[in-house]
Image (cartoon, rainbow, N blue to C red; front, side, top):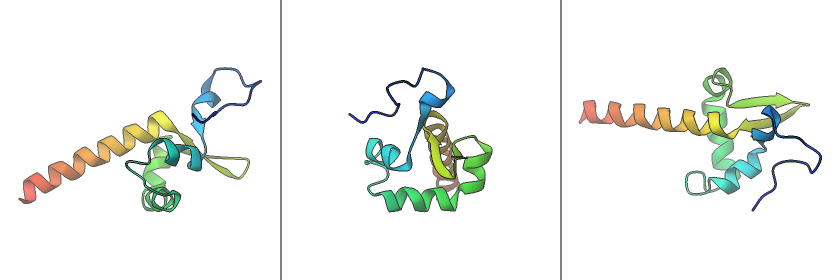
Length: 87
């Protein structure tokens, strides 16, 4: 298991933030490599930012795992609906 908080970090809003590498390792079924997750973030950067799913703190990319997952699920549902209509 990957530790996502520092030992002295208290539970709170920052506790839900993970690095790109941590998120990829926890979601390897969907993003088999860090590069595939980076590509996804690049392709959807504005929408992910608007959703609060990605943040830049101290010049580093952080992922709000719950919001990121909700974004991926909503995007997947929308894609499935588009395919159903096109079929």
